[in-house]
Image 1 (spheres, protein in one colour):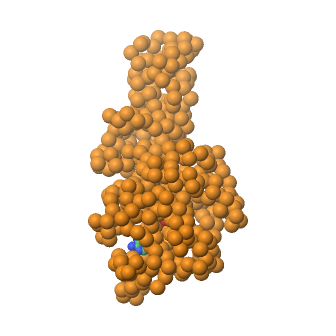
Image 2 (cartoon, rainbow, N blue to C red; image 1 turned 135 degrees about the vertical axis):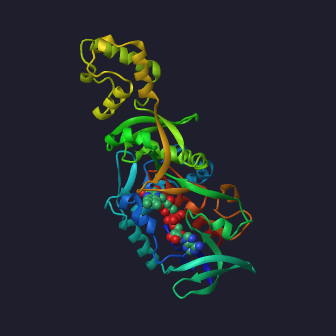
Image 3 (cartoon, rainbow, N blue to C red; image 1 turned 45 degrees about the horizontal axis):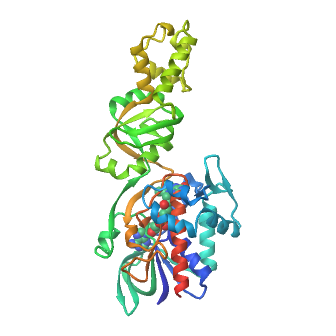
Length: 413
Ligand SMILES: Cc1cc2nc3c(=O)[nH]c(=O)nc-3n(C[C@H](O)[C@H](O)[C@H](O)COP(=O)(O)OP(=O)(O)OC[C@H]3O[C@@H](n4cnc5c(N)ncnc54)[C@H](O)[C@@H]3O)c2cc1C
């Protein structure tokens, strides 16, 4: 018999268990992890550096980075946001650093600092950690839970009783179906945060540009209203970079429904609108009227990309700028503002990926993280239908929801 059974030995499970013990040391808390290893994603996160959160302490701004769960998180972040998590880390002697793009990492540049701290605290606070224990479900018995675990090392079933249950099983696809089918709204998970594979014909054009990056682009899925801004990187399989990852996150479900076959239109000139771009092109043509196209650059683009665009616009780079027709300028405007790439698949982004979907936030109280029709069961982390764009927002969602669950359980006890 234990007080709190925490299911899942990842970021949310560990942080929640630690906070329960810090707030209510009298409670006995155990973590049950189905695999032989805990904190696996923390260790590989951020390319091994663990992007723990983002430099954004305004809730209204922070929530704009969550394609799913923003209004739920607004209530959660008001109680526990970026600053509060950083205070906690700093109080535990972890120094952090903010990078130019706002991502926050441990100053050590090593995810081991975070994983090590969690493991150290779990040990110090007498939190039992049971690896190779797969949660199979539970029954309610006189205001308690009787859990069934599959002890994977010894191939046997184990029953454990607890007063409270924290579900922190991450973004796994089958939990809803297997365990609580009817008790809450379950939104089928689909991948988020991936890069785009160009279709064969477009890939042939782009491949020689592999490694080229453009810092200020806008990308839009054809037929959709929204476009997403940021750097784009041309890869040997298609396109990547923050603007692409943002698009994959905000449009995760739609792109899944399209089986990852769609067309994107890229503006290589960021915020420049059509009129301003046209004016700029005419001004430059006038200024350089005696020069050859190959010797001028109208917008700030890497040479290889500029050459590709001129080539696609059928502009003879050995011709004189001043003789350019209106038709040619129109083609150039179109190519710079709405460069089409046919997409035929996706590739997992190695540094960070998550699932969109999980337990609907409608079924959960943001004040306590307790499932509304399941008293005593708390949920936190990626198992919820909450996910952010890349940059530390996914971990922040995990820390904040775990903190609220820990406070609610410690208050009740
Ligand atoms: C490669 C990669 C890099 C990332 N980098 C970053 C980053 O730098 N910054 C950022 O903000 N986010 C990052 N993320 C996302 C972030 O890791 C997740 O959002 C976060 O780990 C979610 O924490 P969690 O505890 O909810 O889930 P998880 O970390 O997935 O932990 C869930 C745990 O539950 C266990 N489990 C599942 N089912 C059961 C069961 N039935 N019984 C017992 N245990 C079970 C799983 O084995 C797992 O250990 C990254 C993700 C990946 C994949």
